[in-house]
Length: 338
Image 1 (cartoon, rainbow, N blue to C red):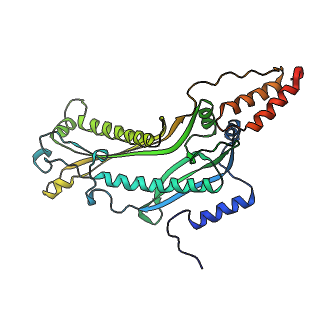
Image 2 (image 1 turned 30 degrees about the horizontal axis):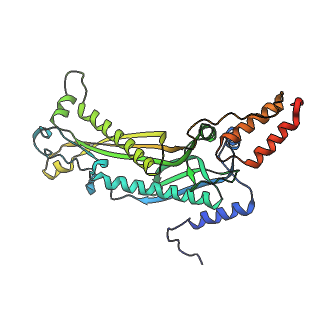
């Protein structure tokens, strides 16, 4: 008899898949050959492909539930109102803030399940994570939030306090580690802004001259700035020093004004939605490591390869100390024949 899933922890199918992977001892990943080599060069090994998914019903969205209220007192009056319309911004407490919160909860649920799969495989983090959102088949009021990546584990004894998640591919991850930085978490910043088509906007729009529509310029600038601000707030809360951007998306559309329609007036609002994805990072070394001096410095290709591997392990906070000592001994044994 199948026990109903309460929604906590991993879905039953995901838990079974993780158990099968652990028992088989064979891992899978979406890493290319170059990415695989890059990840290993900084002291990490892939442990398996992981994913997280969540389907949310978002039927109570848009203008019909008041989320897209322009908050303009002049809406419904002649010519769309004469005063400059404000921008009802989600990050400033506009009604759309509740809708942004639903999207944020859905993404965090998917990311949380991917992280749980990573932990189930004994991983220390996830690289090359790709976050997508798409309509759920046969249910247009539902959206599926999905994130897929490759879980990796450090070869050494150092373990992060919690698994990291990042969008960086294998090469990007290796460069980040080698430069003295570590990824923390994959973040999503979202903002929704609504602005009424006031008299000034309509005058600029239908002018005989080429000119800027300042109200719409302000709307786009405001939501992009707010989305970036949401990313910065999340990164700061997690102790990150900065954010590496992955992607950004902008959607703009027009719809009838809620406030004007209440006054039996056909006036329009513009709604803009900005989404930005990035990875927060933190510095683990405040200054460059001192150059290491070897007692024996043999020449030759094999010696060069050994020294490159030694430098890679030494520059990684997760480098395997036993592997470093073994390579150092091998390099010394080469002597003049290296």
